[in-house]
Image (tube, rainbow, N blue to C red):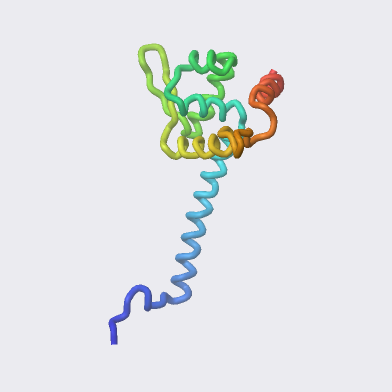
Length: 143
């Protein structure tokens, strides 16, 4: 008869219950982290900031010019993204440069870009409305 292996041995039901509770607690913590991450992404301007940073690091002034927003608005939203650990900073003299914090942020942004920005079949946009129309509506709503 073959010796018992981890696959053939059964844990007592109380040990399985402890493992299941531990797994669930870990899953609940990861769900909270994912929810916080998605809340940070759910703000349209913060998402635009992250998309801009996915192209490379930028200073507040560069982001202000690129996105056409006031410096205070850009700085406020960058502070929130920094708090959520979605962006990191690098100082060069008096200028602070922002970049994406890690590859997980980049991967999620790439998935969003693929789902919403790349053309669908026949070259038609995947999302209803033109991007300029959406941008105009978003800018008007922020004012």
